Image 1 (spheres, one colour):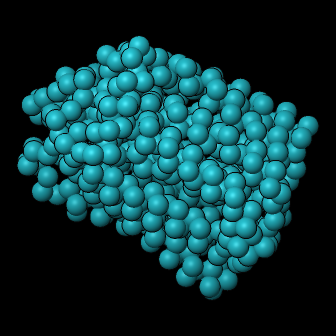
Image 2 (cartoon, helix red, strand yellow):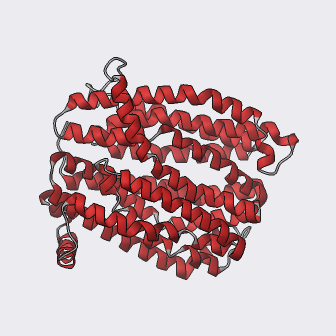
Image 3 (cartoon, helix red, strand yellow):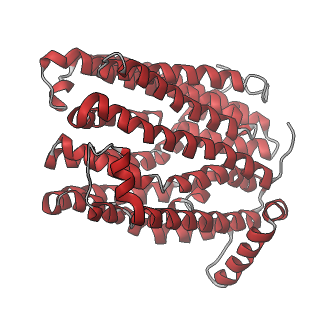
Length: 459
């Protein structure tokens, strides 16, 4: 395996994340919303958003073992302990297999027998359509468990960029399939099938991409013991509080708005939040570019370089979202009207209520990559779960009192709680400190402006 500098790794990850987060994620979202709105109408589009919250909760079933194992594998391989990497890889796919075998019958029975059509406000005449669509969405989640395992080989071999490219390609495949089936008058059933087919194709492509990388990492049954699986499960259980909290905020807000104001309000709230969260994609771009390099630096014990990478990544993330938030303040309402073809309309005040959470989230979310990359996230996950619960409660109360504007403001609750905690722990883990931070940030900015590659290579 050819050794790469930190700078080369970050830049390669940055290119792949730009493709996935901007060209694919943003591009697909921008195109998908008007396609679905025109084909389904505002009310059915709101129902589809509500239906899509179910598989989002099901993704929590992977218990975070893929992320935990990925961090450990990269740190082990970086330190030369390939044997530990083999154990983690085997434990990961065995955990995915056990999880899928437990969930598969529950998915089939639950989605095909429960009256989910009434939950989204439809009658018995569309029951089969809704249930089949939901079943396909849930099966896609189970397939993604094995895609995550296969991508661990790419991550351990410092080819996280390839996994990101494949994820972005999957989004475009799904969009093309959605456009094709909607052109033939399809309903929720074929929309779910489009998601399922794209997930299967991503699984195959991920297996093909990693076929010749780190051949010592194999899907072996006898390598990982029960104890290895339990350790991975226990660490994953702590990590899982993060996506649980994320789902409480993102999906829970939709459920709260639906309960208070109905599906049309869900469509308005969901699309406005999607537009605002496009600014946060710069945070995701930075985070997933530096995450693998943080794991490698911790594996090598190079804390000074990790501290510098932490400071630079937070500055870049915060500066980017502030710029994009300014663009939304000036042009957001017109962009939204053009985007939805005036099918939905928003008040500028609603857009402004969403925006304060964007820079606040960037302040702590990028810093949290330090916790995640070295698997020291127990305190982070517990604090975020508590913050998410408070945010969801605030969302329901503020929606009933102030409508959609109250729901939009509720997002800042979690960010205000997380910022001081995350930063204090990140500084401790990297051996950094607040004293003299201004001077170090000035030096970092000069290096970033004048010698970005030298900065990363020499630390």
